[in-house]
Image (tube, rainbow, N blue to C red; front, side):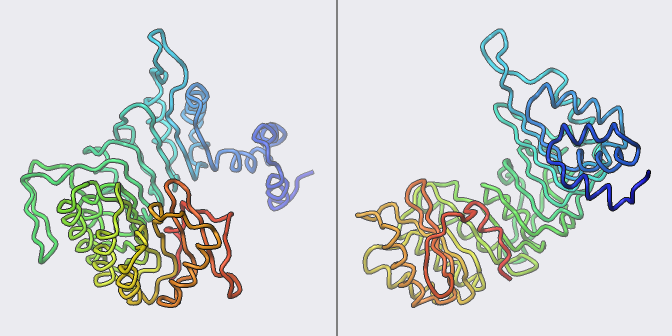
Length: 375
């Protein structure tokens, strides 16, 4: 007896094991269609040998590739070769490229490479239009051509970006960049029209990709360690963020060495250029009289909801109770803040305002706070 499509979907929704889903594909044609959608909708490819087998299956069955909505590729070799090293199977990236050509309806793609440099030739035959892309690929012409084609991409992470070409001439007034005709590593000005979330450790990437695009959330870091170098990066970053086609709401800005003086410079720059920030970090919370200057500038960020504060140099290190007291003090000057992230070395403690009380939140998803939409 045939069931309704809704009944098959309801049954499949309650099957958690992938092996059981595969078993369902063998029971009947109706179950096959529904179970295959659930089985191939989201794929995480980690073990290299299993990855190659799954890629073969998708290549031999194009209709399965069309079912894949989200794909994560964890390219991490773990089998030792004769020399004591670790290598991926020789056909690994060829199979990956073939799979990416088959997944025509893919919307979310994560490529994480460990221990080797991976190039974007694997994307040459891709026809999908992504919404999110986490990319450990080297920046090359193939990657640029792929990104130029992505008119639906909203969320982008890049692990690589080239420094500005010596032949590039940047017009500070207009924000335009003129490059030599031989430079094929620049994104077209009209590419990535939907880009909203951008993460890259290179400020040059922010300067190249934010202007003219509706970017609202940015995560990056200073690459220079000297103060003059960081000051120049800060100037470039602020100028670029101002040229977003919408208002930047979230800025997660890391530094290799946090100091009170430079944090005050960062806060002073951003409160002038981005007064409507909702998320801002990471800033050193001053210990002495400079804290009053810090508070004075913080008062101008009247929409701020979440702030990340570095307190590693405090002596003694603030306890959770002391953090709640600091949060209460900060709210006197900036009452819009409802979430505080205190950073001590590699530990983060989140204090939230809940029902008019400041409490420690041990369950907070700290890594993604800057991504939350507070508009």
